[in-house]
Image (tube, rainbow, N blue to C red):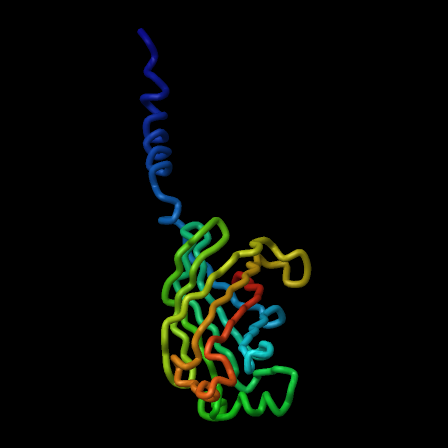
Amino acid sequence: MNKPSILLNYGRPACVAALILALTPLHLSAEPRKFNIDDEHFSIAFEIDHLGYANVIGLFLEAEGAFEYDAEARTVPSGKVTVKSESVFTNHEKRDDHVRNDDFLDADKYPEVEFTVTDFATTGENTGELTGDLTLLGKTRPVTLDVTLNKAAVYPFGHEEYTLGISASTTIKRSEWGMTYALDPLMVGDEVNLSFEFEAIRQ
């Protein structure tokens, strides 16, 4: 008499389990992880036309942010960046004071500029479009940034945590947030190019 098949006695449950695992989408088991933006490696720059002669380039020196990222599903479920209006810097003290007043940022009344993530869509292997609500001068409007994931790896020194390196950029029209100073006659451009370079550490 033939001995009972090992496959029948023991193999079938294992095969069924393996089949279930194989058919289960990876993103169902993935979990978003929180990342804090490293304030030592966070640069926010803007560029705006001045009288058609040249672009003024400036920075915001104080900002913080965090977001959730699901590497398997390639989604960004949530995130927020807060920028201190007073921290604007264009390498000219008198101009900086002007940008802080109510002609532009009105920093006394609106000390913070906020961006809150609402959606993310992949556009390539390491690229995507990040959509969110930008609150400036008390007005909130949607903005979409082009995002590139430059690197994702354990940091080689210092904190030695898993870290993302990200570049992002967008262009907004300041008039859409009610910032209309020097538009008529046109002395300062309406379009503002924004760029973000940062490293984010997994928590």
